[in-house]
Length: 143
Image 1 (cartoon, rainbow, N blue to C red):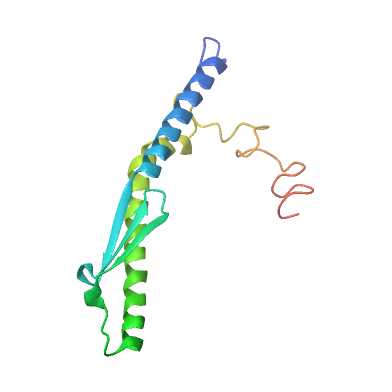
Image 2 (tube, rainbow, N blue to C red):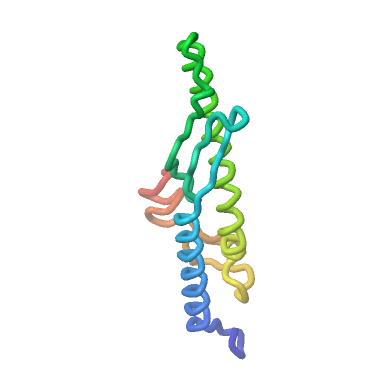
């Protein structure tokens, strides 16, 4: 804030641009990263990007019993699902690690601005009466 309690909008804009750059960099790091999930003691391995996109599945031939194809198919399907869940857990953990520090700062507004949630007239913030197209307002969700 400037003397007299005025908001420095240029400073706010610069901070917002820095945060946006950091978010874009973190998103790119996630896109470039790869995590793995495994099941069955390594019989099935799933590779996923840090954004959670499955990029590969490897099934060890030891997981396949030629004498019982029906049971093998069911077992392998279960192992693939478990490995996918493990990879998604790893991707979510990586996302929290990369994005958490950035998004936590956004939850309470931009640093240095305090809590703007009680200011009237700012869309999406507390203290804002429903308006046209907004939640609860005419033409908006819930109307």
